[in-house]
Picture 1 (cartoon, helix red, strand yellow):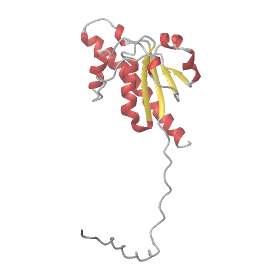
Picture 2 (cartoon, rainbow, N blue to C red):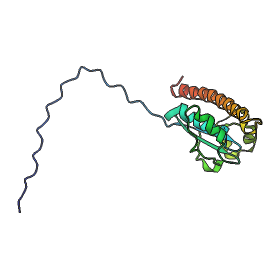
Picture 3 (cartoon, rainbow, N blue to C red):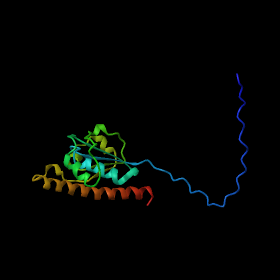
Picture 4 (cartoon, rainbow, N blue to C red):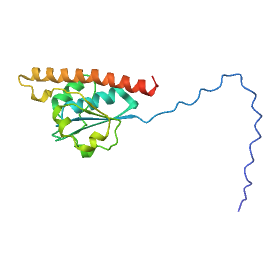
Length: 174
């Protein structure tokens, strides 16, 4: 049997010369994402679009959820108008309030019925109500319905951009 000798220790490193480089910037403290829950009755259109928009616009600053008081499935028109913005919500699904994990930094109700029918625990978190018309109930030809979904999407996009600006200002202490 051949016997191997233990590996040799590497030569001692030369002491480091003092650096003339500027000192490293202090490590940035990363905060956990701001956690938002969007609520509407069916979790089919408004809250689904809000979830997709907030995830897209907020990046890693936000953790976004949506739910409904009576979830009914994701509306195909919502999927289509979000796709126009290159935001894919086709894999999202309708959830009930019991399916989303609290706590939340903010709960946003998007319809009057959801605001009045939310369980008591939702009221334990900061809350905003954005009364938003339900495009699912718009009548007329497919283009009229699609136009109503676009209007709600665009309105939500503006509100979510404003919300993100407030979150950023708060994080930066302004």
